[in-house]
Amino acid sequence: MGTVDQRAKIRHRSVGPLAIAEAGEPRGTPLLLLHGIGSSSSGFADQLAVLGQTRWCIAVDAPGYAASDDDPSIASLDDYVGHYIRLLDALLVDLTDLLGVSWGGVIATRIALRHPSRVRRLVLADTSRGSGRDPEKAAAMRARSEILATEGPEQLARSRSHRLLSPNAPAELVERVSRSMASSIRLPGYGQAAVSMADTDHTEALALIETPTLVVVGALDMICPPAEAEQIASLHPRSRLVVIDGAGHLANQERPVEFNQQIDEFLQRKDPEMSTDAETGTDELNELMDSFMATRESRTEDWDTLAFQTKAGDQFRRAQVRYMGSGGTGRHEQDERIIQAENFTFSNMFLPPGAEGPEHNHHDAEEAFFVLEGTLEVRIHDLDDGTKSVARKLGYRDFIKIPAGVPRSLKNTGDTPALFCVMLGTGTPQIPTYPATSPMVGITRD
View 1 (spheres, helix red, strand yellow):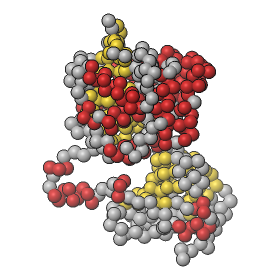
View 2: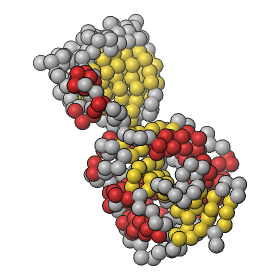
View 3: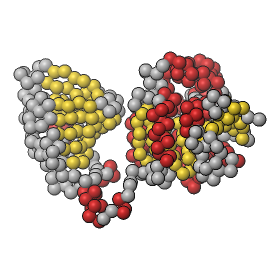
View 4: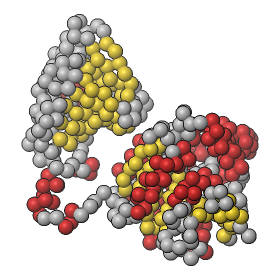
C-alpha cells in the first residue's frame, strides 16, 4: 500500500526495489525525475506539485537512498541505468521525458546515450560531464564514502547543505535541504554513487546524443557552475541553455517557479530545438538568414593577430574569436566567415590565467565587455600622467562599458581561462593608441 500526501497530491509507493513519489494521472508520456548525490525524491516536491497537475511525474529514490532498497552489486553508472530502465518497464512506460539534477543529470545523460529510443525530451539541471574528467574531483568523489562513515549523515549534511544553495537562500530552505540529505544518504549507496561519478566523463559522448535537450543551471551554482553548463550545451548539438538567476546548485528547489516554467515550456514545445519553420521559407530568405548567422562551430581562435604584443611579455598572449566585424588592432574584412559590421563589432576574447590586455585607448568608439567564463579585471587609467587607475573585477554575466577616449587594460586574475564578449561601437574601428604608460609603447608588428 502506498501513502498519499493530500496537501501536495503526491503518492508514494514501491516498484520492485525502488521507491517512487508520483503525481498526476498515470497516462501519456511521463516525466521521470532523478535526484542528485545528496538528495532523494523529496527534492522534487515542488516539481511534483506543479508539473504533476498536467502530466504524470515520477520521482525516484536511487538504489541505496531514502526508501529504496540497497543494491550491493552496483559497480558503475550503467548499473543505475539498468535500474531505471527496469522501473520504466515495470510501469509499462515505453517513452519518457527525463530530468536529472546533478548526479541524476549524469545518469540521465547515460540513459539518453544507452537507450535513446526510450527518451523523448531530456533536461539536464545543474549537472556536469562527470567527475572523471578531473583527477582531483574524481579523488574527492572517491573520498565521500569515508567522510560519511566518519562524520555520519547529519554532520555531513550540515557541512554541505549551504553550498548547495545561493548565499541569499533563506535559512529555512538550508535547513530543509540539510534534513532531506541527512535522511536520504547512507552506505553503501552514497559511496556507490560517488564512485560512479568519479569513473564518468561524458565529454566526448555528448555529441552523440540525439534527444532534444534543455540544459538548466543556477547562475550562482558553485558545485556545477554555469561554465560547466555552457560546456555541456556547446558539446551537445541538440541542446539549448537556460540560466536561472539568483539560484544555486539546487535551482529546482531555490527558484521552483522559474524552474518549473522553463521545464513546462520546453516539454510542451512542438519543436524544443531553436529551429523554427525556416525549411518552409523561400531560398532567398534562407540565404539571407544564413548571411546574418555565425555558428560556434564555424569560429576559430585567432592567436596570431595580437601575437606581436608578446614582444612586451608572454602575459599578453591571448586569442580573438571574431563574429561580426574586425577589431581595431587587425583588419579581417576579407574573411568571408565574419558577418559584416555596420554600427558595432562583436567578438569573443580568450585570456589564459594571468594573461593581460595592455593599456590602450579607443578614441573613436565606446567599448563594452561581457563575461561568459572566468574572472576579468578591467582597469581604467587617468589621462593626465597615467599614474592613477581604478579596477573592477567582473565575473559570469557581468558587464562594463568603457567610454571612448578612456584608457583601459584587462587581466585574467583567476586560475581558469576567461572568455568574454567584446563590442566596439563602430563598424570600422580605428587602430587603438597606447598611452605613454602602456607596455606597448615602441612595440611594432614586424
